[in-house]
Length: 121
Image 1 (cartoon, rainbow, N blue to C red):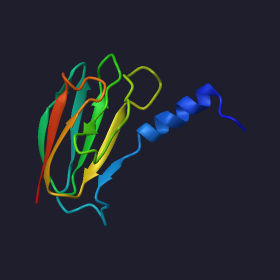
Image 2 (image 1 turned 45 degrees about the vertical axis):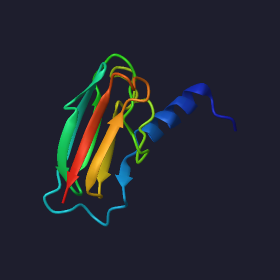
Image 3 (image 1 turned 180 degrees about the horizontal axis):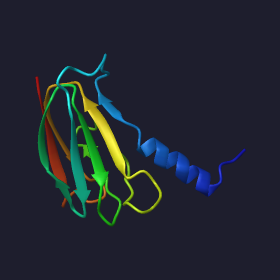
Image 4 (image 1 turned 90 degrees about the vertical axis):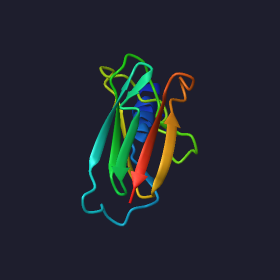
């Protein structure tokens, strides 16, 4: 049975809301937390975050247009995160299991939007 456009939109939105895992975790690490990043129109707030290994980051689009959170090294790609009020999920989450510095950007606005996740042991 072919998917109707509305069904396809729901499916694509659900896929966009899936969580990333940079390296598969065995279980959350003790002391790991969740850090929230707001995606406004043409900015990430905060644009640089420092987290411990095992922590999660939740990016939430609070702007008026779609945006992405896409690793410069393609460790993750949220695809388009819709703005609030559309009835679709407007956030993307990922848990970081690898120590390192992970720059990212918005694929839709790469010249204007960039951020960095710094993961420490």
